[in-house]
Amino acid sequence: MTQQPTPLKTLQHRIDHSCRQAGRAAAAVTLLAVSKTRDAEAIRALHAQGVADFGENYLQEALAKQSALTDLDLTWHFIGPIQSNKTRDIAHHFDWVHTVDRLKIARRLSEQRPADLPPLNLCIQVNVDDEASKSGVSLAEVPPLAAAIAGLPNLRLRGLMAIPRADATDGNQAAFRTLAMTLSQLRHTMAAQSAQSLDTLSMGMSDDFETAIAEGATIVRIGTALFGPRPDK
Ligand SMILES: *Cc1c(COP(=O)(O)O)cnc(C)c1O
Image (tube, rainbow, N blue to C red; front, side, top):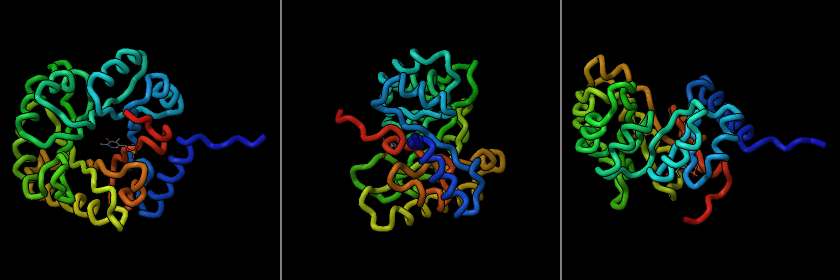
């Protein structure tokens, strides 16, 4: 009997292949398993296969899973919209947050980050296609927001995140390239100390991660290609 490769193995092959094609080391790209709507056991099973980074969109759902998985050494990323009343739990229970697009939210996260935890890793969400309905700051708003966040004590600004449109004819290549260029410009304009930690481009999902890797993604956020189609909410 021949064994089917697991979805994870297939995905890792595709990520490795994209890295090779782009002349990048496989270790340059982190797989963030997007586990929204999946249960704690699905996370446990992926962790047993070597996945350490998990992304969640809904706070209450995430907290329930986290408390069922305290025996595992996992890195938790918050990737959903953030209202002010969620910042305390995010500051207490996550290692990363990818979806900050307001200084007010960043300030609260910094104030509420417990002193015994390392700084919260943070990406600014950019509305790279300038879509009316989307979260994220405009490209022009990135430098001032980044400069303000860099001055907050309990955060570590790591880079930029985007969710480009779903219907672009170029597989979002232009959007990914724009985000990469924006990060590179930011590195040049920020003070040396802040620029050093700007190493993250959180971009690419199940349908477009190969293009994102070609354009410099360092974190790809993958749900469907790992876990199968999501149940309707
Ligand atoms: C759901 C989600 C993903 C994963 O999407 P897939 O298409 O299932 O891979 C990635 N990023 C964010 C912000 C999400 O909300």
